[in-house]
Length: 140
Image (cartoon, rainbow, N blue to C red):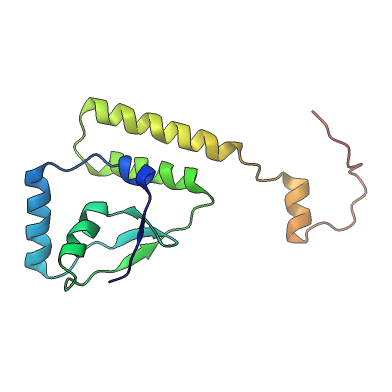
């Protein structure tokens, strides 16, 4: 069994299962003898599948796979978690509003991270051909 890192902030974005839902999930996994859906990871950090991972830790004989996703930063990962949860579950109106708000915050933070402009990106990618049209001065 691989040890995945649990990020409390990631885990807290996922509304908890009821006891009955958790028991049903565990029964389904045991009946199949494997996980049907891979655990979603970013590096060695679990992004989606916290309940399934907890069940796997109790039953290490169960086969599972992971699917890595690429994120530029943790805000992108948080936004993905929120979008994924919004698309997958029957959520209460409060839970939906919470996830929408967290998604908005994460996407706003991710957008603030400087990604460059056409001039700086061209230089990074080797697309700068000695073009002298740019003085290098900052503009508004």
